[in-house]
Length: 303
Image 1 (cartoon, rainbow, N blue to C red):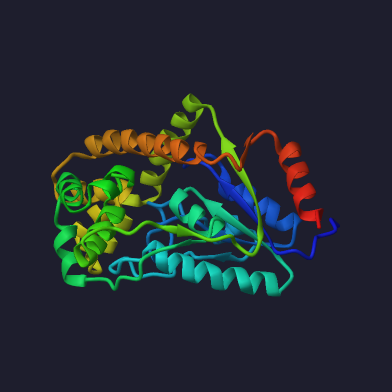
Image 2: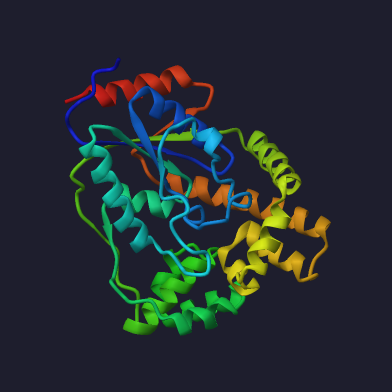
């Protein structure tokens, strides 16, 4: 049994979609008496399972997982709520003398926890949200660019959820304030999983076909039948955006598959770009398990 330091510590497993993060996080949790916290901006929603690639109960192997299925997909769950809920979960895990493992590919969520970021406390405007959800990505981009050109230059312009929240804040304040950081009261080790680009692209396509076979279209239809609007599905992005277009007969199944495959690859590229900016991340190939274990063991044992 590895001797664990009494200091508060957080292990982060991150990387692009389809890189194998979830299985590695479970493996590490089993070895270091850990619990996993998801850092995925869409897996927080209930019933968005196949489309988001949410880990199954069987795949969890008895390891507790947090920040999954905590929000109604009809309601917007933003990074401020994520930070608040994750802070509570971290305290609970540390109080049990266990090791928290933050795992996911939403870089903004990871950074928010690791660098203790704070955001403007602006109440949500549900009427404005509903109006904005009906706009195309291009219209949202134009709207934010007009309201706050500075924020537009720094935001992920391909993410409708971020654009909508930024527009909401800019509408209330006239601009989007700078995000502030304060030193967290814990130590962090960030492990990044890197994968050869061509191999990752093949994994993305194979996984997409598997999800379609497993009932991703039926999942989207069920969500819509239970009140999730096509506009809201559009704003959820990626899989649900193209599933919504297919279910409205705007594109064929073949077009949906092709377009979605392209968009997921672009998303993986954006994830890599985001994470590569952070020099605190230690990068490994998934095959380098021994090196990863060595790095974690040294971190866990250090007082």
